[in-house]
Length: 200
Image (cartoon, rainbow, N blue to C red; front, side):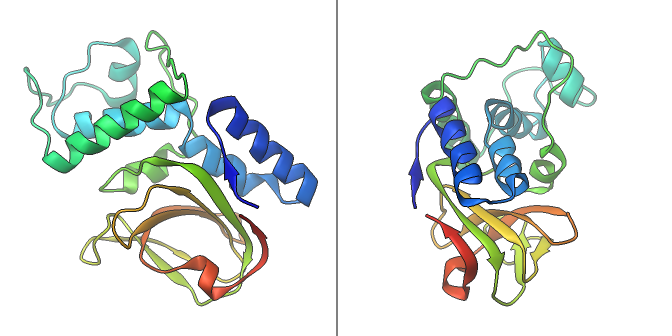
């Protein structure tokens, strides 16, 4: 089964899939959290924060702070400009409206997004692999084998593929059998290695 959708339709599809197929909700909830409106807002603004942006909003200041920021427009690489534009398009398409007057962000996957060097852009659909059967897969900070390793998907993990690819690279989010959450880039194909159950 392959799911496609935006916003509430996507959330309904994930919830229905979880109930209909008897899947554990945690990996899908985690994947949805990272690709939520709050998740996209966080990823987009994390790029600006790393470039030295000084936040004017209450939420931006609370989440990122302004220590060491530089006045004026931040200089973003061409790649980061494209990522920011793609995230903005996705936010608009999903009808996102994050309240920047708040002082906190309800984002459980924040610490995992912070580990990534290149922020991922949500795709239009997602695939799920419950009970990954292949060899352990290394996940990296960026779509580059020279970047830092940020985690390992062990056999038996529940894996979600829900982001746009960059060449041969994709971002997987996974929940391991010990309850740990992982998010990172790899060129490996989870589906080719086998799963106990699929959602495509």
